[in-house]
Length: 78
Image 1 (spheres, rainbow, N blue to C red):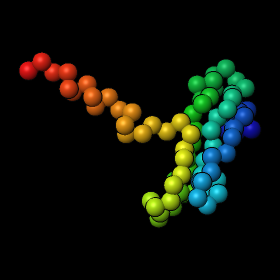
Image 2: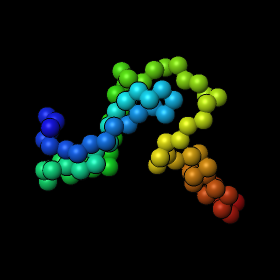
Image 3: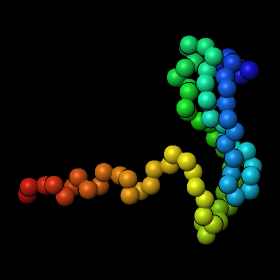
Image 4: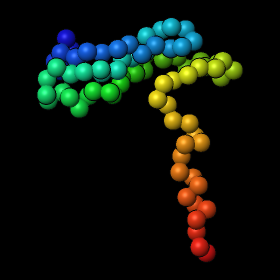
């Protein structure tokens, strides 16, 4: 139970240290809260500034820079 009503959530955790850093809304039990489904909340206070970029990690559903539409600029007829 949350302040905005009953929700089913899943924890989001750091792949490096295992610390829980937020949650994802799996389902909302009230119609007025259905817009939250699939969205997530990250708690800033649980995320540290020190990041080891040499370690590999995977975040499901993330978009890489190669997935952007930068190639559209090559179609100019100037």
